[in-house]
Length: 452
Image (cartoon, rainbow, N blue to C red; front, side, top):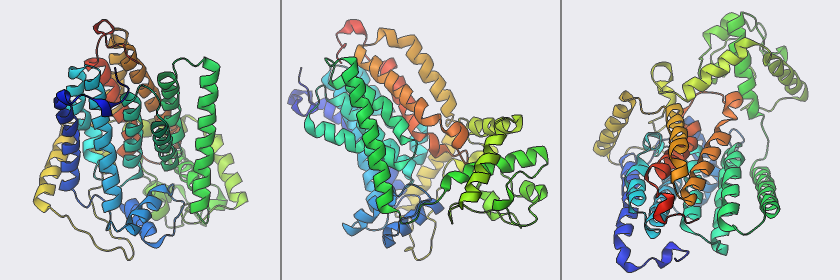
C-alpha cells in the first residue's frame, strides 16, 4: 500500500468526487455569508490588521495573518475567510481520501457527507473568529496524520506549523496540541521506543510554547492582563450571590456597591461588568494592572475557591457552554453581524437572498437544539466505548486521540471561561464529531483495515 494519497490510482476517481463534497458545502456556507460575520472582536482585529497595531486583548496571530493578506492584495475580510475555507475543505478532503485509499468506502462516504455537517461548524463557519481558524488548523493536522502513513519531511514541517497556529491562536491551544503530538509519535514512528517518543513529544511541546511566546512578544508592544477578566467576573457573581461586595478596592470605583454589581450582572457573560456599573471597575483589556492590583485580585479570586457560591457560578457557566444556547444564552451562540469599528470600511452582504436562506437554516438548527456539545461529547464517548474494540487500530487510535484532544482543550474553561460562548467549544465539538464517525463507520479489525 502506498504511503501518500498523491499516488492513488486514477481508477479510484470516485474517491476524489467524495473528497470534493465537503469543500462544496464549506464554500456554499461561506459564499452565503460573504464577507463573513464580524462581531465587535472581529471588527477590532480587522482594524488591527489595517493599522498594523496589534493589541493583547486576544492572541495577535489572527490580526497579524489578516494584516499579511491585506498586504497581498486581498480586500477586507477575504484573506482570513479564504484561509478558513481552505483549511476546512482541504482537511475534510484529506480525511475522505485517506479512508478511500485504505479501502474503506463506508467511512469515506460518512466523512464526506456528515463531516462538515457538524451543527456547531455550520453556525460558526462564516465568523472571522480565532476559534474557527484554530479548529480548521487542528482539523488539517488530523487530516495530515490520517493521510500519510510515513512521515515525509514536508508533512512533518506542515504538521508543526499547524500545531504552532493552534497553540498561538488560543492560550489553551497547546493542550489540544499535546494529544495530536502523541498520536503523531505513535503513528509516524511506530518502531521507536517509548522513551524516544516521550522525548520527542516533550521537546515539541517546549518548542511550541517558546515559539508562541516569541510570536506574541514580537507582535505586541504592551502586554495586558486579559486573564483578569475571569477573576473579576467570578468576584462579581459571588458578590451578587452573597450580597457582599468582593471586588478589591484597588480595582473598583469609589462607592461600588452590590446593587450596582447586581444591575450589571449577566450570569453567562462578563461584558456588562465593565460597561454597566456607575462607579466603574478597572477594565484589564484597556490598561494593564499595577503590581498591587494584580496581587489583590489574585488573593481575592483564590479565596473564592473555598466558597460554594463560586462553584455554583462556574457550574452554571459550564452547563450553558455545554448546552443548547436558548433563552439567556441565545445571543452567545453566534454573531451574524458586520460590526463597524472606527474607520474600518463599511461592509455589506454580497448575496442577500442567499444569506437569508442560510440564516433560515441556522435558526432551524437553533429550533432543533442541536448545539449541545455536552450531549455530543457523551455520545462520542459511549460510541468509542461500545465500538472501539471492534475497529481497526488506526481508527481506534485516532478516536482516542481526538477525545483526549477535546477534553484537554475544554478543561481549562471550567475555571477560566469569561462567558458561555459557543465558539469556545468549536474544536472539542469537531473532535468529538469526527471521533464518532471513525468508530461508527470505520472498518472492523477483521476486515483487514488494521492499518496504522
